[in-house]
Length: 248
Image (cartoon, rainbow, N blue to C red; front, side):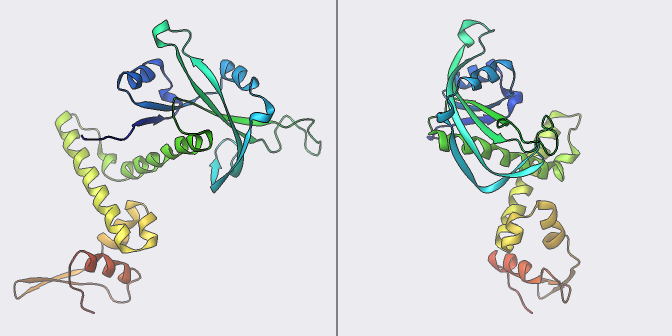
């Protein structure tokens, strides 16, 4: 497709698998995969020196599902690691194990009102051969979660009708769904700052599925829109940005 930039495959821990890494190496692309914190990973984390941790602050707070709270700071470090040693030697992969640790607040192991003897941390781990520096590689991996929001948005609309029993029907519907999603998002960006960040369902309710009366005359279609309509200005921005004429 003419892509000249370096491709990085980012995924959650469900894709931390030797065949995935082998496919990445075969295709000459880099990988950045989340890793479940199991025994071997915990042992590797213990080997990280205490002075190797680098404090970071998030530009925007990140929701922590396990801690059920917003997190605005953490610490990161990395250590070399060889993964998939239980597989054939050809699948043994040495890369960077990047660890982000977040202070656990009021852990269940500490009775209420009793101070803890030492800090308790929760760890989030990435296995990657990324060439980014540590402070860039860790947030770069977290950006892959953006696609989760896109999928959730699509499943709330056109993808909610899949799958069909016919492969060709699925392929056609997926193409139409992607086209509709992109056009709706483009309309949202043209409409307002609010709609630029809104889900496509919101954009459809505010700007597309609207009660307008269609009139014809002089070989021209005219839309009579509601009066005192909350989203009138936003719709007008989309309408005029696409080259249409607005009369008030």
